Length: 247
Ligand SMILES: *Cc1c(COP(=O)(O)O)cnc(C)c1O
Image (cartoon, rainbow, N blue to C red; front, side, top):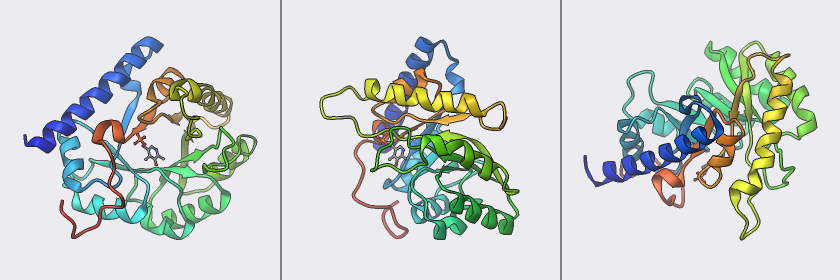
């Protein structure tokens, strides 16, 4: 294993240990929390090092970068699983459907329509999450808390979409505050929302919440997937990785 492999394996191990500790403290099984390693800006070799360290799921927030990297990374046909985790423009829906195993950021009916149309054309059922702006933060995407049930119902009624859960990204905590403490009530709110929807929408089970700074609070509140970048891979580059750049 080269230096890159050693660094990435150490980052993966450190984050897995944090997840395990948080799960244990919450009385949860560590296997109930999936690690989505956020590889945005990092080259394919970094993804391959994480795959070698046992990571199965990778998150990207730009469609072109996701598609290029998915093509560049050695795959066994089922792994890695790619996740689209950021704001998604409707005109990019065509490119991401069927490539991403899970799209985390459905925040409006028009995007659900577009994804449904593209999934139908591709002959796939696309799994999605509805993104909720639990902190009511103008800087964050996501539908409002009180609009979530209607959007979940709408997207769930599309023939080619499966709504399997909810996602959120809390506001940046004020400087000097503990990110876990700031995020925890918001993560609790997402869990309560999911619990309220689950009886009517039994497929809605997943909670995608928690990042490098606040994954402990997310696991404590029931996250089924955490999206972790910098705590695994270190600081990000300035822009997307592009084909032709070093792997
Ligand atoms: C970049 C990103 C993450 C990962 O953030 P880190 O702080 O590096 O762990 C998680 N979720 C989304 C939606 C992101 O864009």
